[in-house]
Length: 321
Image (cartoon, rainbow, N blue to C red):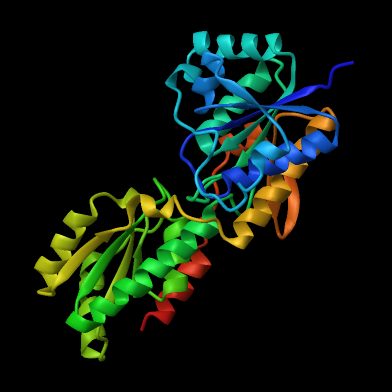
């Protein structure tokens, strides 16, 4: 009797730790008697029939690699009924026991749509933005956080040397979760996030007062979802008379060697994804809540919004004096 098969997809934006998650799913799956199929380039690979058989050895030496060896990408076709029906047909023809989808909000939506058509799908949240409801932390978030903090530490050196204000743009799409954590860890003076409306006049006064109080540099962590960081910096310079520079950290936040925390989280999430499929469960997001592994219905995760930590935001403001 042939082994049951599990499919794996890394979808959407890449995040450090995706390879560690794939490795965990493959090895846990094989341990439990499954065969593993890896689809290339996200859902496009599924629709194009582009896949490979994954073995214990094929995932050797991957836990420390950033990005995803399966490659990834966005697939607009999955948002259409034609694309979705084609995916369902392929999965059923391949006789897959289930599908593990590793990615962010868009990947969750695709997994939920497949579940409505009878496909057993489990989602693993992987996004540096940490904006997925149903988990306190996503795969890749801790790595991106450490990358951004290290970069700001270096920017601080040159800011101190020239008595400058630096606006550092942080990824996060329309949310400021990553920016808040980066700001707290890097000890920045100000964070600008979509969730909190700022008083521009008070901001300009705060920046001026910082130098009056003896600061030799000022760092502003600016969430990309707030608009153009260049335009913002120009407005700050115009209204304060200060020397303001912009540093957009960009895609370096999405790459690099995953941290130990990211690797551990990815490994645990992957093992639980296989556990759920073995138990016949589906349409669930594997997450971590209050330090413990949790399961959230995917339909709940995509219809709910994660709460911004306003308490930590207020703490940061007090620490920036």
